[in-house]
Length: 243
Image 1 (tube, helix red, strand yellow):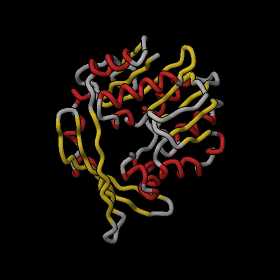
Image 2 (cartoon, helix red, strand yellow):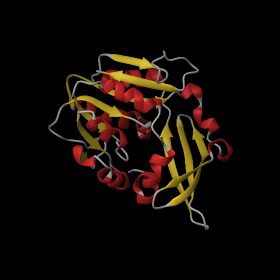
Image 3 (spheres, one colour):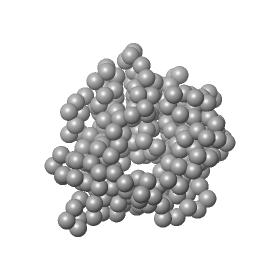
Image 4 (cartoon, helix red, strand yellow):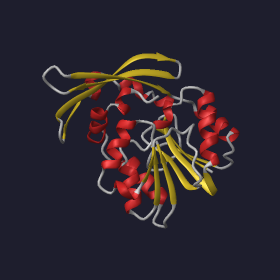
């Protein structure tokens, strides 16, 4: 099930302001290229990338299990050009076969066990067209990104249309091996505060490589950052292009 920060309509509306387009968005748009393709944005969230892909001439399906996120996506300008499906990666079952399947925003890290990863990867592989590719990213565990998820390091404030000023910060509550539990604190002012708990897995590259192979992915490219640099211990990301 999606956590509260993805299912609550008000928090979903705050998402874009807290997560503006950056180098990751440019990477995925470049992967899509200019030739029209059939693309699945799995875990599409508020639909920003899906709508931009459709605007560029691609045939796009956006899928997400969180009703709050999907409501924002459907109401987005240009959203009528995207086929929206309320589904997660495990239960997705559509006749379309995709040239590209994207999983952005580190959504891959919500799969907390090898079994969950394996089931999702097999299903997404089944939905690929011949020579199709799955493209996604997960944070490099060697970089230990969660150590910077403190209130002081992550504090931010944004203005959200229809809501006003929202202050937010992260706080890690537990680390157990590859599993990191943290909270996102939202302050809407006047004592109106919401705490959204989340759980992520920081899977190792070797483990992920084995799971990709078992799911049928024979060709895998790895990058350590959005500039397509190789994966090093100091790389913040594990970016995967698998076919």
